[in-house]
Image (cartoon, rainbow, N blue to C red; front, top):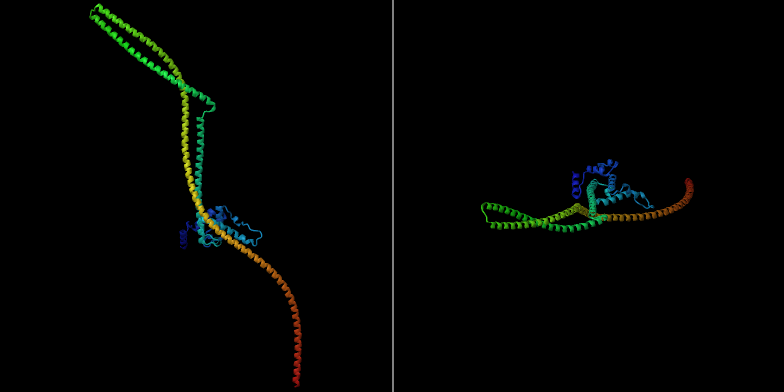
Length: 464
């Protein structure tokens, strides 16, 4: 129950979900670690007490996956040759390298309080939060890579379509140029044909005018002939009716010879006038036939001209077909231009979306850069402190070297003093031995004196 409460607190504080330990182990086994490392990475490496070596290995593999920074690169640190105790630096260098890289990377995962204690002495809850942040970032990175791959694929397909459309447009433009431009070999013939067509058009116009005038005159003549023929038929009908009336009248009435003569003279005059009009009509007919023959000749000439005109019309039809092909190609060109505009609009929209995304990424990059600058400043401060410590260490080393020199001098002095002391002790020992011998001799003399005095006292006691 306490672990669930801690996970809820972390979810409330962080902007990313805190995963369960089993999910974290499964993810890092499949996505980050490889080979034996994935087999040996278990739940016991995280809970209840995380193993520092396995956690450091996971961080190294994450850095290798994201930045292509291999684990062996953490151990390569340039050092000066004349440096005492290089093993200390070789032990510290990978830890400091991983710490610096993780300090640069973890702000992308919204973890801003990474410390050396998380590498050297990791805590279970803290490592779960950091690994969850890295897992969330890797999920986000994978999704972004998939979306960018989709955008790149669509952009490539659009670019391929655009290239095909531009190629087709160029081919259509070349075809239009070929159809619209006359080759230099046929330009002289085209000019001659154009001049001949212009002359034929002008002559045809004149001939059409003449033919129209002839047709009008022929129509007028035909109308006059029709009128004359109608008049002739009427006169014939009138003559036939008059003859019939005359026959009737002759049968009914006996006429006087004078009247008959007068009437015969009238009839003769009418017949003469009718003959005169008939002759005039025949002359008119001959003239009209001549005109009709001339019109036939003109029609034959017109038919020849019409054949020439049909040939020219066929060539004009071919040119019209070519013009229609040119128009169709122009329509295709316009449609392709519209599609190209649509594609350019789509490309512009894609560019806008990509620009917006790049703008967002640049803003995020600026924020990250600011955070990175803060972290770099902190790292610089740490490096400054480290340099100060290193300088202090060098000073201490110098002091130690001076103290070593002084100790050497002191030891030499001590050696000399010891030699002097040994000499003096030997002298003192000899003097002491002499004293002891003299004291023993003195004691012996004292004892002998005491014994003599005791003997003297006994003698004196016995005497008294």
